[in-house]
View (cartoon, rainbow, N blue to C red):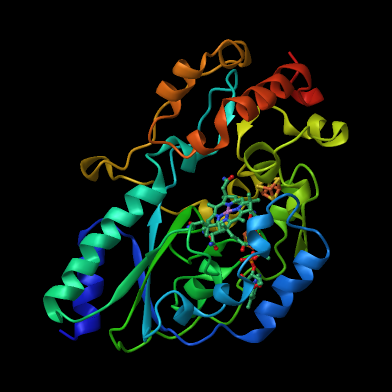
Length: 312
Ligand code: B12
Ligand code: SF4
Ligand code: SF4
């Protein structure tokens, strides 16, 4: 088996569903231009962090100076559809243990494996936090295409995928990049988006319920509040609508500690939370970062302004 195949086998044995390799060369400059245009149009809203260190996002070698390759791994997090309609909705990825820590731990074990092949190998692990353009890297590593919903979509696993990377000095043979978007004429995600945040060639985070409920720090505009419905944290209408997610497998990773919680919450319960109760609920979850104040702001919207079709 080649060294690349060995690394991939190891990644799969650690619980990843997909793994691909790309070189550490800069990401094609047209993507950087697209990103800058997006920022110039203000589509990042209050996510100022996206406007910092822009060059680094498109240059893996700024993460690790003698970088030669990037190993990109993805984990499937699709849960069984929730049929219960009476409770607040939380995006499925937030029902799992915090993926930043989970994926970092798994990638550390993979990095140990690299070290066992070459003890001098250098590496840096990235999951969201180090500002690299993860989707562009994943596409180049052959993981999937970027769909009209702006998410990495794999033919077999769909788009309920979370990504992480190892930028390394190890010189590895890259996989074939994915260059074509396989959405065809489909635009189900665009039609399903409650706020019109998605369009054929664009995405405006300022209208995205995921952004509004997770990242937006101040009051949410009234016209958008009415679209939030019962979504307490995040949104995934554009994933649920995607035909690639219809037949994709459900995540079965209980044995490695990656299991979604079954959460049943009402707006009244959330509004009554003390800081201690919130911390107990959000411990080891991405929800913790958003903080109790914003979660209560969201719960108030869920209670006050439900979409007309959701009213009893
Ligand atoms: C900021 C951010 C958000 C913001 C903005 C989302 C966005 N689409 O940009 C908000 C808070 C809204 C958000 C929401 C979500 N996010 Co988010 N988010 C990020 C983060 C930190 C940066 C993304 C970014 O740079 N956006 C700015 C835009 C302009 O860049 P971009 O969409 O990546 O597009 C660039 C390139 O990909 C390229 N490009 C875009 N389209 C195409 C198409 C083709 C054909 C080509 C060639 C190039 C190309 O051009 C752009 C310029 O470089 C990444 C992690 C990371 N470091 O990358 C996670 C990440 C994208 N998020 C993720 C997830 C899971 C989500 C949610 C599903 C969570 C939820 N359920 O609420 C939603 C999905 C919303 C959506 N439809 O995008 C995952 C996505 C995994 C996947 N399958 O792709 C990531 C990769 C985190 C991770 N480590 O797994 N997120
Ligand atoms: S996460 Fe929700 S609001 Fe955001 S683009 Fe997808 S469907 Fe639209
Ligand atoms: S719903 Fe259709 S258009 Fe949207 S990402 Fe999936 S295949 Fe592409």
